[in-house]
Image 1: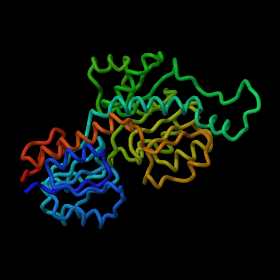
Image 2 (image 1 turned 135 degrees about the horizontal axis):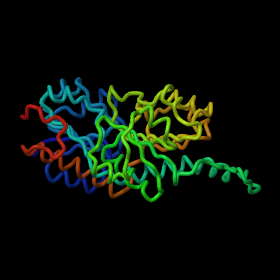
Image 3 (image 1 turned 45 degrees about the horizontal axis):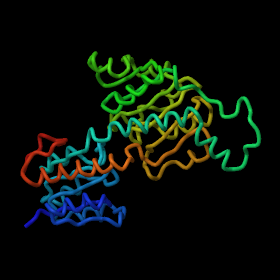
Image 4 (image 1 turned 120 degrees about the horizontal axis):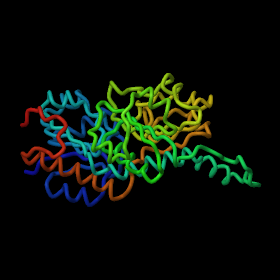
Length: 326
């Protein structure tokens, strides 16, 4: 008998076919968003779950499904999984690090530059038929080249963003839980380690790339936004909840910062509708890793983890190594 798994969202057909070689698969290729009760029921009798960040994997789910051995997330972030509860239940939890670093860094740059140079605002102006003449101050914004880049969260993605700044002749400041090794700082365009408040005061463009946790909740709120230059931009490609969205909306509305690029939101996809009334914000629907090769690599990485976990091996990306393996 093959182990039984549930694939909680639609995935690439070729990855689903690969999973079917190893498992008895129930899949959600119609891509419904299940309620907590429906997800709990779908997990019943399953040995593994192929999950995405949209599904909360809770202590209640583990309690109701004691046969579960593994939950494998198709994401680098895993704040949707109660890791402590998974460990207590003897369930291996995994994520998909590394495969999305470069693509996410590319997108961070795209969003930052679109924000600084007012790309979407000016496109909407053009599409609305309002462009009648050239003006010296039409959609002027801050420069990116020669400016100061501030990165909060200097993991693999943050370092990849910093490396790209070399071609723009930027000074790089960063804040992190711990300082990088000197050789890592050198590779990251000679990034300078500073406190968060100093970074916010000095940076022309602030990019957030830190993981979400209780400790990082509202890392950027009203007090932090007040420290930033009125000409500065803020780009969030981290996780919803890193920024106090209500405080950001108020800062943008009041002109306390110039603009923001936001790919992730609190309570997404139910983001605050007040964002839509602002012209100085670029909004995208959590797509920083959305290149075809990268999303396929993420799906295959999650599959690798699930195949290993249910074959009696340690998954490559185990998040809770203290788990009591079945």
